[in-house]
Image (cartoon, rainbow, N blue to C red; front, side):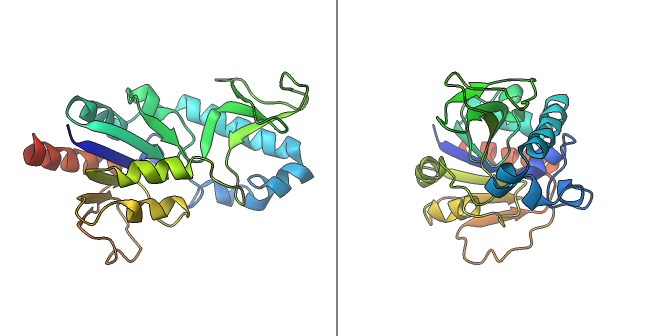
Length: 230
């Protein structure tokens, strides 16, 4: 069974109604990113940071997996699928995918500011004085701008092992995550699904670009893969 690695970005969740930071009307227009998604913001005004992520959690949990999420889950019938996602929502899991690595954290989890112990909180908001077992404040289990990406080495190993690599709904502009495509072998077929690819792709070998949104483009790629490998 071929190893299919799927790298997903904000574009796939956007079709489920989750706002993105980068797009017009997205979250960057409503908040100063430096005031809600950095370690400095947390030190300055943790209450504002918690409020921001509580809103994001509510939005993510109201959203439903779309056809793109479902197609990826269905591909597990034919391929050994591993997902690497930049998204902090749980739409892949709710669609039925069983092997998901979250690079930038998970909105349904919290962690201690001191011990880094992680707690599943589901729908619950995180409030000031919500403490871990050791008595320390809980924060969103999110990788903020300026923080290290703990799962990056794991993601690199997954990318290196890919027989087929798909990029869905990512502009490939957010690093270090965007560098994962360069971890794949030159002979690995790569499929990039995004309606507006605005990066230089000549350096990416064996790449097929499909300028469609995720729900449409994934159907196209799934058909190609089934004809080619099954």
